[in-house]
Length: 56
Length: 133
Image 1 (tube, helix red, strand yellow):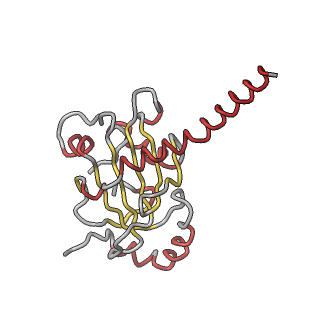
Image 2: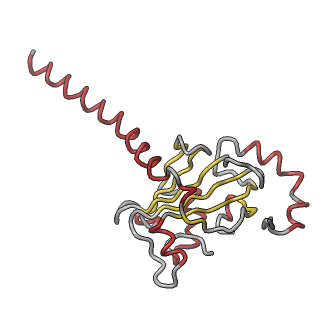
Image 3: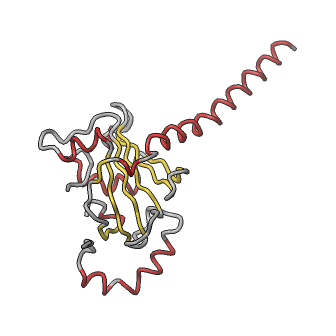
């Protein structure tokens, strides 16, 4: 009984960890790009581009 | 202020398609659409991008490209982001993580190691997968 309960708890903790990992990763990445407009601007002005020409 | 809008003739010939392509662009960065892009780089990335030495971006380099639907748009529709991760993260893609983020930079739409982003950037493999100036 106790072993089963422990297994259930462990499984629940694992599921919770898996569920929160992507969210925490997303928050980290979003925080990294927050305020990006204060960074160095590589293009002097908006350039007309297509998706497959991002370097233009 | 003079804005670089590329080749005028191509703009005219494609004008009829721009609206339909804009609709397709609502949900996908993979769709081929025309937009106005402004590129920003954090300190780590800008040092390499603007320098004349090795074109190898250090871990933590971040490049953000805004995708504006109009030249005078205040907020971008979408952001295309490259984040340089630790060695081994994405060997086939130069250890870059490719993201598409909503225009407000509040939600990540997609997170990719390969796919459309890498397919395009693979052409710049010799420049550490970053398109030239």
